[in-house]
Image (cartoon, rainbow, N blue to C red; front, top):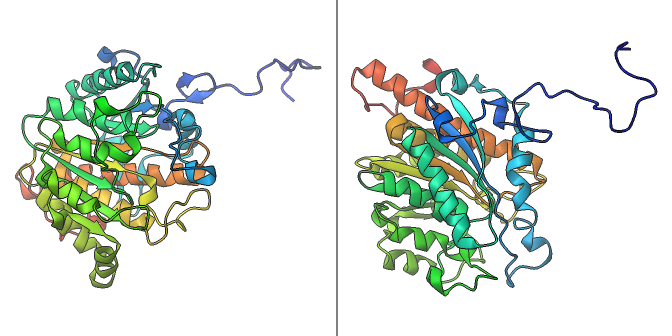
Amino acid sequence: MNDSVRWPRRPSDPVVSMQLPRHYGSVPTLFGSPPARTAGDLAGADIVFLGVPWQAPVPDSRIGAAGSNYFGTNLTPSTFRTNSVKYGGYLPELDIDVFERLRLMDYGDVEISNDHAVTFDTTIARVKEIVRAGAIPFTLGGNSGPSTWGVLKAIAEEARGPVTVINFDAHHDNLTGEIDEDDPRMPRWGSTWARRILDLPNVDPARYTHIGLRGPRNDREVIDRFVAKGARRENIFTYWQIARARREGFEEWIASVVRPQIDGADRVWVAVDPDVLDMGATGDFGDEPLGLHVAEVCWGAYEIGRAAGRARFGGIAFMAVPFDAMKLHWIMMYIFLYAMAGVVAATDDAGRHGQAGESSQDDDPTSR
């Protein structure tokens, strides 16, 4: 027994001592990374984590368990941070240590206001600070809206050319209706954001790529609504294309899907809704069957990072992640780490080939 411990102890006495940088209260920073309190602290960062803890109201179309990815999502960034600290950045299967090569910082959370417009403005301003510091925004909601449209608006406005969006999602999220038509008591971002982002400056609808669309929560007009906004039918990938890709070689297929959309783009932004995963992927979350496997989303993230490289990887965003789905949190961390490992691999590819931005998708990543 430590002689310095008082006995009998008081219930208010501390039982542990925080050994990691503190985000707030007993919550550490993401992966124990250095905290950034002001925009000036972001200098030298390669990746910056920002929580967007906005909880959307449960829509009238969801009741009971169907609203599980709405309840408590304002708590998700903090629980995600706490669940992250069992991990480092080394991936032995790729022989890449992400955090040795890319400096991560934690910029805290966006302040959420009762005035929805203020929340959007705050989100946009915070993300722009990250982009202007030369870092990659890694954002986590919170529900769609501030964590999707708001984040992407900041990235797109800072871009100097076309922005590619690659969206991993089981559902369309592209119902019609403009922002100013929303009832402020029941904003419809969860069902509209993927359509609304196609009007943002520099976002190229023809490069919009949707991976994992499936299931009866979608309606017959879903693809028509994307095409009407300028998206290409051939860039909307449903379960059937994925099932065929599994038979013919998923790794080669996903590379052939993402690379043409990234070529010629100034930035690529990746959105991941956890419902893209098969409902058997984790025991604490599941929304739809016939989804992508964890390994497939990880490899897709890696190929995106490798195709984009450090200069063009514009950001990665996770939304609608339940606060208490611990296993799902760890899956999302894998996806993030694989995306950043792809960014590192792109740098290594360029060094080997002697020409910045050049890479070969046929290289075995384990040979580096």
